[in-house]
Image (cartoon, helix red, strand yellow):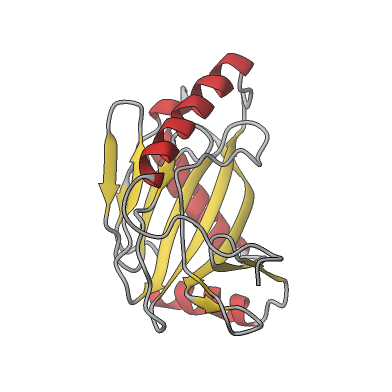
Amino acid sequence: MNYKDVPNKIVDNFFTKDEIKRIYDVVQNTDRTDFQQYLSYVSWHIELPKDIVDKVTKVAEGIVGEGLVLAEYNFSRYQKTISDCRKFWFNPLLFPHIDDAFEGKRFTVDIQLKSNIDWDIVVDDWKSEKTFTMVDNQALTFSGTHQVHWRPKKEFKDEEFLEALFLHFVPKFNNFISKEEKEEIINKKNYQYSVWEQTPGISSNPTEGSY
């Protein structure tokens, strides 16, 4: 399959209440975290139970129409965060990007678990830009490596947050991206970023050494 064309699907009521409880039990017992100040989110490097991994994999394979293997995943919380010196705030951002840290193709399942704020996701599927307003326990599918994706600029209030699982799958066969294809994707990403950057709102957070 051409990963530019993978379906952008919303799946409702993705997990059962018991599955969500078990996921949060794992998160609460996970010490391995990273704070990404440039986007203002905390990421937990969790290990999900096999039955939950199998469930997401089955749904993802049914949507993309080919065999998949889960390669990377994490639990993340976006919120407004104050710096250690208590002089600067970091506001959640998600600018137009592709998941270019990965080698090869990725099919992504983004599952919103808990939130008290609406924060749209926009996906460029090479035909149009699609905007999705998700609710808790909904999943969105897209190709993180082939479809530029982002969220509109939004200033969070102190108590607002959004928590989600991001699961990235590789195809069992043909995981190659050509140099020409990569360049085409990067050009689209750069264009969408230039448009996003000009929209009203915060475009960046303080960087290390600036506070």
